[in-house]
Length: 182
Image (tube, rainbow, N blue to C red; front, side, top):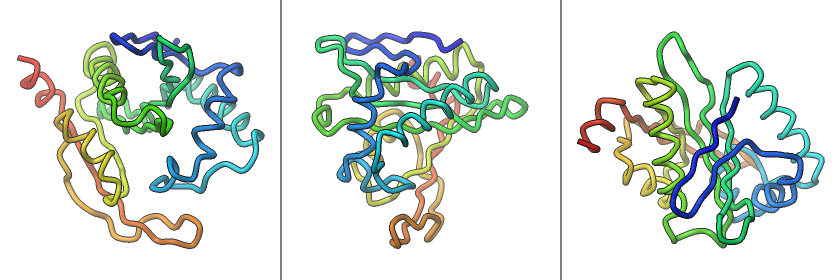
């Protein structure tokens, strides 16, 4: 049900129970989770619950979740998701997380391109949206490199660990993506 997507250095596939140690390491890292919409995981039970939600999203068609695997090491270094898939309006949200050790080498750009190609190709979506903390300059840069445009700011949308944070709403249209490729 979840297609395997490949890039020169990465393999994106549905996460499996055997990936949970790597995924737990990512989502329990306070630096990775600094700008996330929930606090870092505190126990592996949260990773197991996450996998159950992922599998449910796949079964219902509400989401498509990939584990990002580095081909060279075989390790899972991140996740990337299309969620809140709205087939009537050909729209979905995109979200992602990457282990610190994999930052700054272009892995997220590769993963984003593969998923965006799939979303606008096989899935025939018209619009992708991303919701990020505006302070997350790395994420804003990653989205901008793919052609996403910041369409607005929602003030104090999330409260994580007692701290309020804004949301930067980004959008990318299939027509914009096609124009970049052409």
